[in-house]
Image (tube, rainbow, N blue to C red; front, side, top):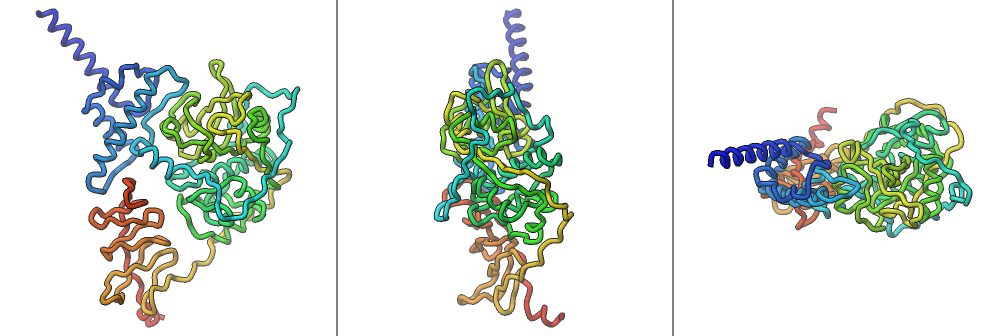
Length: 460
């Protein structure tokens, strides 16, 4: 009995130690065995959730939202464990998307779309990089090693992946031609490229190239920094035109051999289907996950290589350095394929540049402030805000407030407001949501008092 008790105690101690060690894991590796999903206790899952909340700085203000998010987190964790218990070429992990359903993730973090109701630009077909029999290409290429790729950026919850994909191509060819790596402005594209593209509501890379050409260039990231939301176009900064391109072209479609040849010469903008659950939680390895050709995300191919006999593309994403392999992923490459994995060879394109940039004008002053927003003849709000009534009597507003966002929704409590992309107010919970039944919420915003016009006139 004593020997049995001691053995039992030893097994219990080893189990407790292994559980404690594993509870600290936020991303996963090959140490997770096939039975991992079966021995996670409620306490362990709770500990993982709390660790994840701290790591990603997540808080939830709505009543019951933390518990709802925990259930989503728990389901995602089970999916990740099940995947990682198999013998696959890539791993999944608890990244910043772990509290989102797949539908929420797809709605918020992708952004390739065909712009309906507008005249489409003609495709700029080119045989510049068409693969021909006898072409000899290197075994591997990585434009990061050549200094032609800027740091990984983060589009945030704005569906502007198309802008990051396009700027990556522009930055790459500019470095190759001029020798200077200059980070250019995605925010200029989001704010100013509105003839075809729709800012945080999506767009296409070719349209972005067209904008840069017609505008005569694009400003730098430093001068026109990214905000992660739709804004008013700054005309002064739009006219800075620091980096120019001469044109853009499409790689021959559905041809991974031609895409490979193109990548030998410069980084290439591509559209992929990135809405799958495996893509959502990708952490490392060569991605071979289940995906189709419903293109919904813009990324940048910066190279290719081979690992353990498996060929792959090196793809730069725009979800920050904490996603994937420091912001990158390896995607399976098969030159015998047509569309390629996730449709990577369906719509590849690139910027064309043959000469130097114009002299850098340096930092530009902001555009003059737009006129104030007029609520009525007695009250105004600052530019880029929305007038919301604070006190209404018999259909007439006696006191106005200002919501510090353009196109905001004014909530019925006469106190708070919601941004245009989360327009549904829940006064009881003090939250804003994308639609009536959407579980994805943010905190409502407090209004500020409007400026009485009469008071302003007396002070003049």
